[in-house]
Length: 195
Length: 424
Image 1 (tube, rainbow over the protein chains, first blue to last red):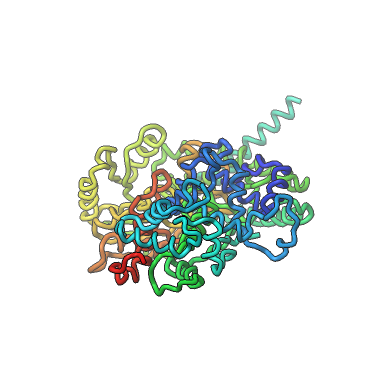
Image 2 (image 1 turned 45 degrees about the horizontal axis):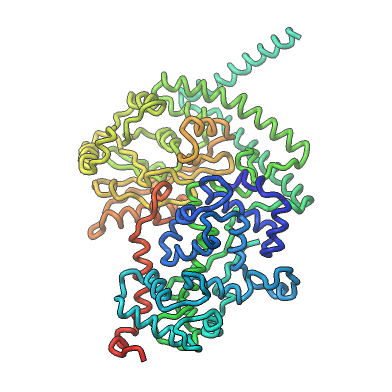
């Protein structure tokens, strides 16, 4: 329980996270409680095992990919700042935010950044392209053993065909964005945080 | 100076004997002098006043985060089919029921992040958050200095709890070992106020009593109103001492740890016990572990396979007065008991539900779920099908495979027709 956790989070940190992510003060303290309750080793950082301890996440077919999104390249620990930065992608896009002047350019929860988050679920080696192989691997994660290799292969081929415009048999981020331009990304990739 | 100490000491002795006499004597005769009721009433008034003061203080200091008993996020409860269907509707190639689209991943992604922020299971193994502070520092998020009066009350509370209630409890608890029918004293020692509902449904001989499990005190609570045969492991140490003293009052069914592993041996002994109609009803907690009293988790089917009549009991603690939940991963038995004795009080409601038996065509798992729902419904608890064993163990791989299967059926949908047509 986060009874004593909030005392470890300083006001300056809260202000910085507020500026960077757009979360409110109370949301940040509540999420810090959550962070703290997941941090079983009490070392101020989460490992992949800490995430996998959440049963509903452990049974999610894309669970490992989602967990991976929290960890920067080559790192095994994520601190609270990193945790919040990743969660910030899922803040709803509010109208008044479009006018806010943010020093870091686009807000973390913009449509582009939400799409980029989803793109990275597929892009296993982070080379900004989704190859046929990568798509197959992610598909395999989602369907388990229930679909044969050939069927999965043809699904992957068809998907790349639809999206690929420059003929390199890979899906780039801009091609990805084009295919999904009619999807309501703002709503589907947002979580309603209370207060 | 010394004279003052002597007078104080005499006062203390007189006062202690009065209080002890007022608690122990009535307890032995099963008579209530109504003090606990008055105590509870006073407590409630004090806590309400304290909460109001804090809330007023909070309004003035806007920076204080408001602690809400609600969740962090609002979730959509649509099924996989509904949500992915909605995603695909806006996709340019509208393929009727089936096939894969890149935006399918959005569904899993959103669900995953929601569960990272707030999930149904891990919160059951930590203490419930309260909407108002109950003057126990352990439950408050930020103990902020609000006013002199509040601090004084809090200080008084500490004094009362540690200097008055605790010694009383210890004294009562020790004498409990001597007087074998002293569950009532135990309850008094813990300042427990228990309300029993529907006593006509109380478990009868030769039956099995099942209840939801929050803490070891559950046993005290139930035994206060009836005699049960307990099923359990022989323990060493402190628990062993307690066990041996309990054994003298009621016949129990104790197992060695090695016997517990043999499910058939266990089942046979339980069957024999309930077949004998003169034997006391067996008390079983099918969740297998302590849950934090906001929900009822999966009931292990073992007790429901034995046959016989099941008497369900719902136990709900009022968290306002003290958190009864035993987080065995975090606290050991002694520190838990200490926390219990220094809480304000233990207030709980016990509902005896009408007896249930397994119906034809119903297997043990379905029966267990039916009983679980009845208990959850009566106690106002959330009915979960997650296994309480998840407190310590990893989730089964088969649950993930279920999710994958569900998703696959959404893709294959129209694919069988197109299988013969190769990629264009």
